[in-house]
Length: 79
Image 1 (cartoon, one colour):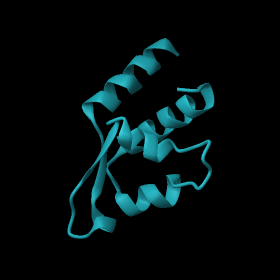
Image 2 (cartoon, rainbow, N blue to C red):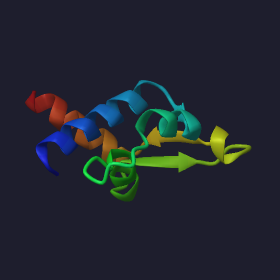
Image 3 (cartoon, rainbow, N blue to C red):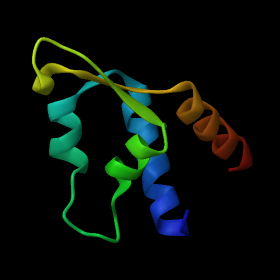
Image 4 (tube, rainbow, N blue to C red):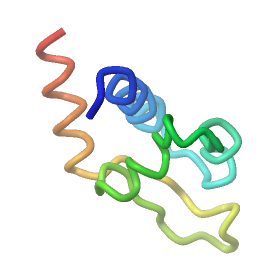
């Protein structure tokens, strides 16, 4: 991970870890068209967050996975 992208990914994980977020809420806050900052897409592809089904996709819940929690914890310990 590049330093800036890594820091933003950790910020995303910390934000989601605060409480479950809806898919809509995450996309409103983290979706970007900038190819240099694909934090949401990378976190999802890397298995750091997952989407749990809801009544609609907008209401689906986004949570930090165990892998994401370990990464967040390890980076917190180094800070």
